[in-house]
Image (cartoon, rainbow, N blue to C red; front, side, top):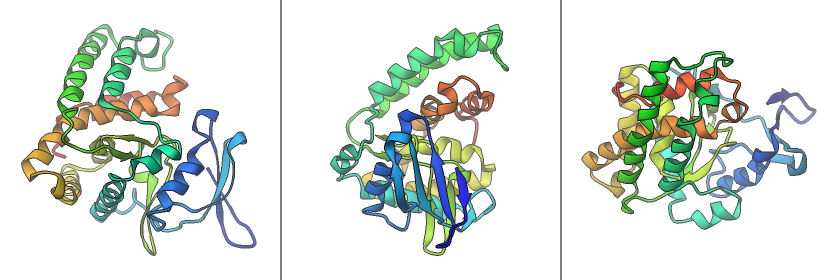
Length: 266
């Protein structure tokens, strides 16, 4: 993505691989209900996988240490706002990722030695790490099964909700880079967010986020679901990442291993 000055103000130009060329249509669907939370597309060429949005300005979430709880509250509000409007998201091309889909994807991925155990990789897993990683698949599948009890709604999932993909603008928080967005469990987006925060901020951010979901369950039930979803979410970001598809980004793999751990307070 490039920032480009024009006679009518700065714009952002973005281009993606063909599999993600539908992002402008998805941005438009999101902006139809939450225009202040989504970048405004001013021109697009889906065939070429490129588009232009207005400069949404603001300060990066990465730099606003201690001031980011409000972003997760805003994100929860957006998710809740689409719970009863999944048809609009599907019409705009959002893929649906059910718990069964996620469990199947995880099972197929963890057993692929070409992705994890190939000696030519920059950071191949050791034999011991490979065995531990293989044991992770059934654990995450069990968590998916526990989440798939039908009592909690699916909604929009960002797919890459990290601190660099949010800014605080004049009208509040703007969430950008919806390349990997889907319809899925709402909580799976938070795993890598909290992995980029310290323990105290992670706990505060999750408390603010879960509080917004109180109409859908007790505090204890929401916390239980979050602890189930957290390691699944770490793997989901990896599965949807273009860098993972191209098998060339070591950071994606190491980040997934971080987010698949329950060892953090968030």
